[in-house]
Length: 335
Image 1 (tube, rainbow, N blue to C red):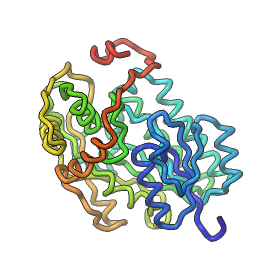
Image 2 (tube, rainbow, N blue to C red):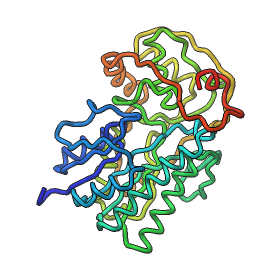
Image 3 (cartoon, helix red, strand yellow):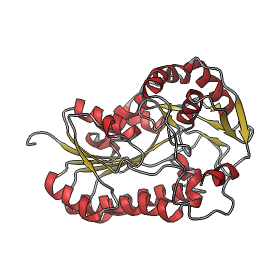
């Protein structure tokens, strides 16, 4: 559409992607959503956007879309973001989260995209002492974090070789409307709400003292959306999310309170995961200003009516487990 920026949003039928797409539409962008619906839902795509069902791993499709739509900006949010499961689905993880990203970067270089916005993860930091800062050397401890950091490095190389401007965000523990309630491997807030609605115990790996800073999606989507038109952000990596951590045990109580439903908490065998993960956000505020930070209880109360209206979803076990050794027994029973 002449006169309007044309933006590709990968994963735009999913959780954060659907919110970013709506923000871009509100800013006057023409938006094309590419999503394979493996974790998203077409009814979450704003009807003003063009929806294409397909995968970023389909190189021919990616090239065809770039040639047809002549994208101004790319917002790459598509990923299979089950961090803990990534140890056991290594080939699937790298194919979807790394090779698929490279397909998009190649096309962006060939078609002279003005800015490539990528959502990475604080998983790149591994088990370093929080709060995580952008000047820390990444030491990811799982294949998901490795793939995310590899894409960050590839964008750096593409900038220096081809001049492709980019912005990287490392969000963490995001929750809110459009979260896939039926995904049993990721997004603990959605898992808890889904379990409550099904009358099942809220399952917590280990003793529940793990700390995370849970981030309401409405606080970060606007920043991600306007980053491609913020030159001061080009070539930069930003942590983005909430500041205040809480334990998973505390989260379970807050979810029950927000849903107005009592539930049982069931502690499962501990799994291999980082115990404390939250980050510093001084840098992102310096470029984008002070963004709102929705208190966790308030964000959960906003999400709860949507979750109840959506209803409980039956979650399917992941069908492509590649390694069974050391898989948590509860996942093994479901695999």
